[in-house]
Image (cartoon, rainbow, N blue to C red; front, side, top):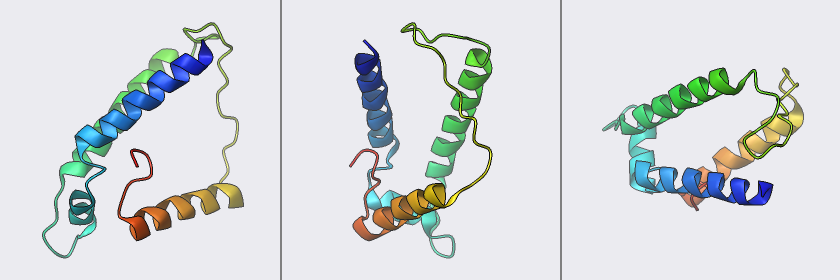
Length: 105
């Protein structure tokens, strides 16, 4: 059952990225072009995602089990490490070189 929930969450996430335009290289480049014709629409997408996630965490923070019955495991790490930095760098470089967001791609 956990795999089904994970699949559904991934599907919703990927569809959200497609609908929001994060899979459109022109829109992403327009967002990153601060000195040219800046397109702020993705800032609203990211702001909405941060708001929805914050509300979700606030509502679920005190639960001991998920809806599937599994134990809630919250992140314990509070420091940035080399693995996190390398993964973030690979994500950003891959996105920049390919022109596609890795999530929906």
